Length: 76
Image (cartoon, rainbow, N blue to C red; front, side, top):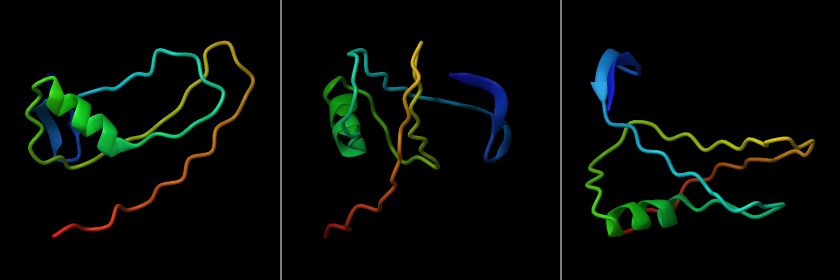
């Protein structure tokens, strides 16, 4: 829980969930639907969310990353 922290609605208390890849990678992609499915598998009740951040960082590296954001097709 983030207690009394800045949010898109001013200072608020809210739940924040992180996914962290532990394996070293030199390429690949991130599929948020796969993250949501795994969180659900572990029993997390997600509900609706207001924002989503996908980021990369290197530890002791000199590489680069390119991030492309797309919108999933709506399902009926």
